[in-house]
Image (cartoon, rainbow, N blue to C red):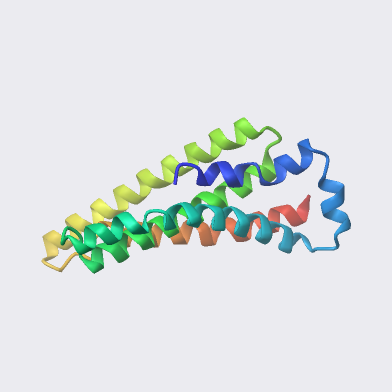
Length: 164
């Protein structure tokens, strides 16, 4: 999961550095397809890393240490975090010219988003405890916030890329 922003942050920067951006333009794809394709490639690469965890999760489930609900919560959380990381990385790749700077800004934004997610989750937890409602769980709330972040950032990236 730590590598997810690294895949996405260099998406368009590599095209500029290797001077292959003109070749990308000559293919005839729309800008929407460029952004979506770069994001999908980085997301697929990240999900391959998450899929490598499946045998360990299956062993934990078989030994009785993890329930199916916890397995699903963690999987949803990791996929939503990967989507948010890819969306932020692609956005920084379009805005900045340096790979290192794009990666640093992406990690800082993800750390901020994670802190906001934790604060929102703790607020909901204490609210549910005060009112006496059942709490849906940290992973599910965080996954929803990460998914919302990716759904906001990716269309913004496509709109921004259309302007340049």
